[in-house]
Length: 417
Image (tube, rainbow, N blue to C red; front, side, top):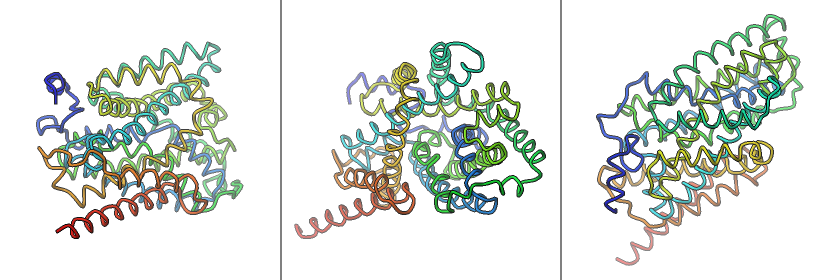
């Protein structure tokens, strides 16, 4: 490593190129606020509205519980690895995919998260512009600059923004849900309007798919946790509680109004201005996390510090926001099936080669071809298999490919002895 890079590491308060030291670790509530803000995402409320329009009450509850357990197990595993090592997802990928191979994981996650940042900016700016009668380009520029500025300051800013927005979205969501329940004659009556177009398996798939992509970035945040118990507890509770609340808020309002976009659900309930303010703050928290993750990915690719790379990510996402919103969601959904295999392989490699992740241990591979092949095969399985749940299919195929490569490697080693 060059002298310049070493200097950059020392100046980098977010430890983007090394493990988080004990002195910078945080307790339960600080981490819980960040992770809950991460899961309080407007898009999850829109997924909830789709669930509410497609499932009856009992099936909805089971879909949320089963999907939440699977999502919590996946993110909880990543939380343990991230906290135990103190490393970002990109630095973990250097161990499991190799120093050069990790750039594949970084490209996938940074590209996806920068894309979702742009979509999130437009998701707020376009309806807000319609409501206020102003140019969406102006609102995109203002929102993008504000979100980029707060993400630039790293984990401290994420904590502050989350602490403000989480209570706001919780209050508005509860109010919207109670209003729908009272006017609709109770939850059973509301969900009886469901079209019944979704199966339980499809509902579980929507629950998992709504945040499995973002959940892959869990180590980037919980590496700051004081200990493994704090990391796993805050992550599992946040993903299970946060996602379940988002789905419930969206499902009840969606089933009552028949709309599947949460912004328009709340407009139909006469909550346009509160929705504008609160959903804007809500998108801000998740966009901050997306931009922070995108910056870390670019750091691994370029070797430059995280803060300048966050600015690059924010500017790119802001400039392309409206185009991304109109053209990129389908491609982002394709990429969503490529990220779960990355997280699954990181967890599996950590379990099998834990010593490689200890402090001071250097990555052993330039490219771990089994891990790379696993991501490619997993992505293909997630996108093209017509049965099961896409993200589960992707992770299962990725792990099989990785284990097959490991078996082949050890067989060769044994034969050479």
